[in-house]
Image (tube, rainbow, N blue to C red; front, side, top):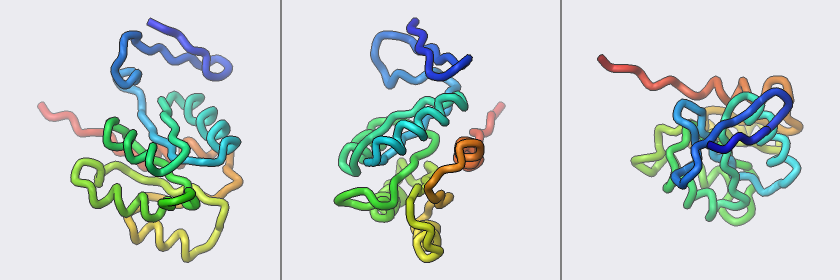
Length: 151
């Protein structure tokens, strides 16, 4: 076992030896964001909320990680270079295996048209920057629905 200190009074314990590196029961989030300061802030807020986060700096890496992983939620920067977050969202929602994964677009643009476009493409939410440090994690996590337990 490896213990990583991720924020004050918060620890994540992971099993060593390969695999996705996620603890069973932890919420797994894929973050596709090219803005390094935004990545650092969002990763900090989400790990302090008990989430496991994988980050990809562009759409190509994000697509590969989305296909390889089993994420509970995916965040996308709306203004990714190359394939933007809106087109990435469209791609995710067409994929049979990934279409039910909640997607949240994060953007510096507060345009109602962009928010509507994201919703029309299947995004669960559209969050504008600057991020609210107190509400960001809870707003994201509100889109994750627990898997029903069948007897």
